[in-house]
Amino acid sequence: MNDCPLPRSGKANGLFDSVSYAPYPHSVPRARRRVAALALAWGCPGLAGNAGLVASELCTNAVLHGCLRGRLFRVETSLRGGVLRVAVTDPRGERLPQVRDAGREDAFGRGLFLVAALADRWSAEPLAVGKTVWAEFRATDEAGPRY
Image: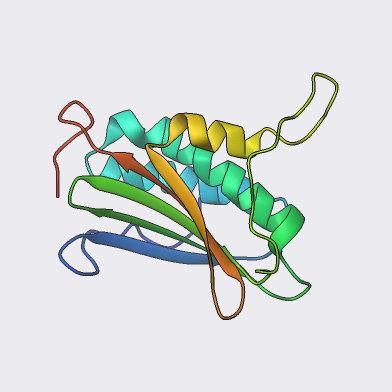
């Protein structure tokens, strides 16, 4: 896990966390563990596994397709209005991600399919430099308190 302490309060009447990672494969499990830990710390244990997995998929895409040498990618996690949001921003915005129809023999191409299946909604937004791909999960009463 990242050495940064888990935040307890943040942006605009909700909970917020932002961490930048080096564009290397070892950053992916670190981001996954952090997002899952945040979901737990923020009272949404039922979302921890899915949010961590989605963070892993979005971070993997950033490392493989969205990063440039020497440029970090950022993972922002927030909980506001009963919605847990995971957003990954990388420096390459010329091509937005799309769900692919991966064949049985394809080794890659299922990540966004998983994101679409696990998250309540997701999208990608171009930025002036780069893009942000985000996914949102509704926090239910079973998952913990709503903020």
